Image (cartoon, rainbow, N blue to C red):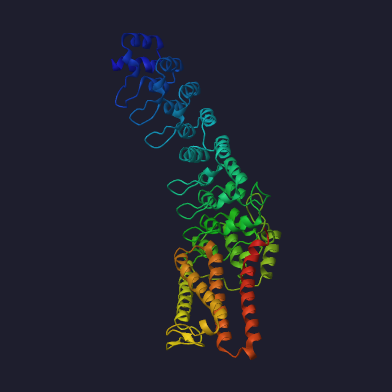
Length: 508
């Protein structure tokens, strides 16, 4: 009997199937074969619209039936791209749009995977993505990966927070769109929130890193465009994105060098603020990588020369390199034009060559910060045990004196200043203590914050020291000097932190 039912469903013979149902009503709910497909599954799989309509009319509940892969008939209809059957199934039971198979895939996920845009749009228009984050995130990921711009736009309009959701590998939808070169989808994301470009996968890579790794040059160029918000990035965001390093310390310039992509290297060098001398965790700059590749084509050799001639400076992070003057023009055959090359060489000669920077690795920075933090902890802890002026050694109670052994003398003789001293010392101790776990997971983009906290602890120690001087010295002579030093130290520290932040804010 199973073979007869299967043949009727596979051939789409509605009349034969009607006769079978008249003979035995259980045929319509029968599961067939090892796959445990129902008759509605088979009608959808073989794209027989009339048969599917007949079965749904007799047994609408079959729309929710699942086979051995936990797939509903809607999964099958979405896989083969049969739009009319999809509409009938959704009309019969809308909840099937949210059902997942064994691989946690919805019908919309399958429709996007198979490239059935009309089916995907029908499903998308019927679903509420605000109420189904997990389903919405997976659908957004596959739509971005396959370049389904309209689906991406629809999902983002319904639930914008899904744009920052990541899969098990740490990929966001923008990561997937970048690796597959789907420029239209990328523009949708950048138009919603340019900061999505700073999302990192499990390897610390941004979508720009993946675009470079998968040689999506047109996508890299899109990320590096400087346009007004919200269409794309302003100059500050572009600079930060270019200089963002992954978990092994590679920026996009390192990756361009590894791939020997001269076009992107030229484009990156034209951007203000690029860290030309940035070293990855192996201590290699982009020039070091190009040098090891031992390229043979003229264009790549010019890229090596360009990077080699860029002078290092104490703060090359925010400098601008005029590559239009430094990179020689090439004709249609890729050969260097002599006049442009001479002009380029003359410009390079004007640059004062210096020894290339050799920045410390992140691990070295962690060790140095650990040492500084440890010293601050020791100093602040010791200051509590041995406060300025010492501790009372005996017990005394009376009209004019009242102290207990082990208590700080200044807490009774100079209570106000001693309170400020304790606050400054405690601040230095607690902040330095909190810095230790932060330093253990230190990343380059955290350096400004960590440095600011270190400066804060140093200021607190200096304040505590000057307050100690005030408490134990003859204030009649030196009081004004000590107060002046206290104010000066505080203002210098705050000014230094503001000065370090200023280069990052000046282009915003």
